[in-house]
Length: 438
Ligand code: GLC
Image 1: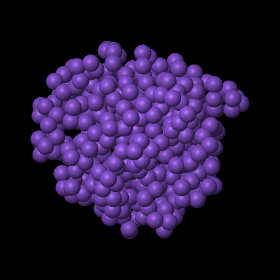
Image 2: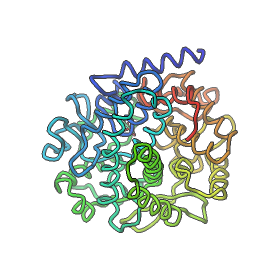
Image 3: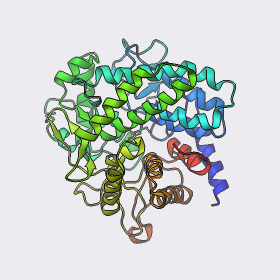
């Protein structure tokens, strides 16, 4: 198919997934509004429907809690075809009256989403009023993270659920989950919908799901009080992807704040500390990777996944560090005519090219990696990531994730998980039409 057709198809994916004021990630699997999806999706709309781009974000922030927490799901309409639904979350006393929500968050995408949208939308008369309205809400979300999720005041934010990472079943979380005893937890295998709507082999196991829900039940028992949760949760991890996105978004908020004439000193202070800590605590000199840190075991998690490269996107590593990361990428993630970039190194024992975040290529990660590599001048590798991303989507469609191996050799289907997936479509549009760089 030629580029123009794919571009039109990608726009159509977004428009078909548009509901009343927001976009669902995919009709097959995800019937609500998701947090970080919504940021990527808004970038896509900014090229062809500016009103929807702004509505998407405004409607996401309707779910924001009073303490600033931005939930990972807004249940604008109820739908029985999803587990865990509202009855599991039990957030009625905390969510705004107007929108039902989940009780955990997702990576902070909105700062840099705004900066990206600004390039397309700065001449729109509604853009500045929109920025004025949304800017303090994003800052409040970041303030929530720094005050509720950084118990040692390091500038590094922790997540207390794997779903908060966005990279749900990444092997990064395996050791932490291994230690969670769920003998007395409830069995939720019969309640799951995801593994019935797509091939179960491409989804997390029942054993893992039991642990995911065990954590949600724990949060609900503690009424989502973060101090209590931190005391009792077995899962508290400073993730590289999450903190890199936070830093990148802080930088963009400083840019937007200056544009609006708003003082950004608070954000600059947060960021200074975060950048320093990510480069000391999460950088592992020996392996040449940025590694997540488990606050419960007080250890780095030595698992090579694509998240380890995200400080490139944040633009916070030195040239030397960037070169080391790129060498590692070439050695452990790039193979013959495989497509870039697998979510897990193929040299990891847990690598599985078909299973969700344990090997498949994800378009949002590719997009961040691409933009990161460009910042450091790795234009060839960046171009390959872009070419691979576009080829995967034009040959197979806007799937949720893709098998990185060459089809001819393995005879598998390349597009996996949900089809007609919104953020893949949105970022296809940005890959094709973007003229500026971060
Ligand atoms: C999956 C992804 C997560 C995403 C959600 C909705 O759970 O792992 O990152 O937000 O789907 O698309």
